[in-house]
Length: 73
Image (cartoon, rainbow, N blue to C red; front, side, top):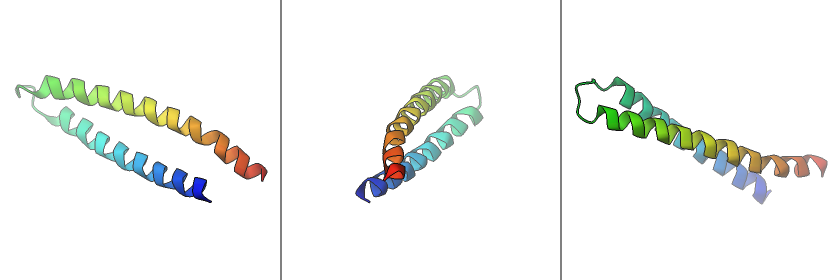
């Protein structure tokens, strides 16, 4: 039960972080090109989104074995 609660909480936190990153990416893409910080924000947004995607995929892989053990029980 504790493992399920931890997985659920982690999943919800991961989704919340994903929404925040998505909002930042969208903001970076709507800034006018004339803004002096637009190129920097675009690079940061793309890196952050890529790093988050990799982290999310690795985290989901970690949850996989726990799900399989619970189903067997």
